[in-house]
Length: 248
Image (cartoon, rainbow, N blue to C red; front, side, top):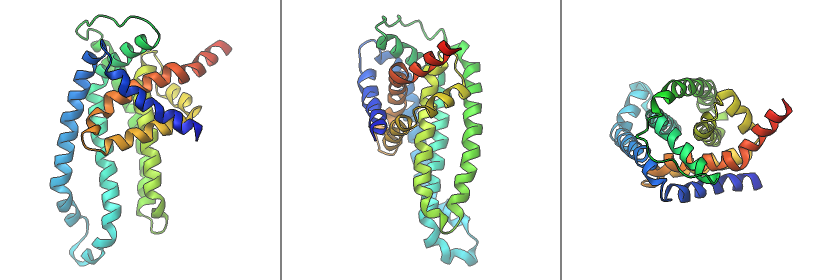
């Protein structure tokens, strides 16, 4: 429980960090991207969910519709949540890396670099796609298992909890990628490090998942996630990395 609460605390810390002078300019673009993507996602789901349900079952099985609605809503929620979160993060990944870099400088007591027009972004693009591809493959492997759990009668009673835990874990991976990627750590390194702090990662990711489901707050989930994950990296995760390097 201590680790869970510690992880949750970093979301609050993320909020305080993105409002600091000198940091706010680096929040603007990720925030705008998140607002546009999630506004589109909310509109799509609200306008299409009934149509999707109508085409889910053949006419002669429509009597089962009332049984499938709860499962369908859970699956749609997480599908949209993952899809639009992933799209927003891919588009804004270079900007998020710059934001994480600036926040880490602030947390380490270093002056925040003067804005340079995001000159470092071209060098981040290749790394971004490599990282996102690894996360997509990891998410797909576990996602298939969770879909099977959701569809199996009896077993599917645990599907909401399983999806919630998975969503929290994936968000922790997603946002920890930015500060760790700035230190040339890639997906396997990130995964190994987070597994050494599972409760902190899940607490952090769970609060971000909750933010994503709350209107207006969901627009701030991305920059808060980047800022909070950077603080988590500086204060906790990097210690294990330094210890591992010293033993080598």
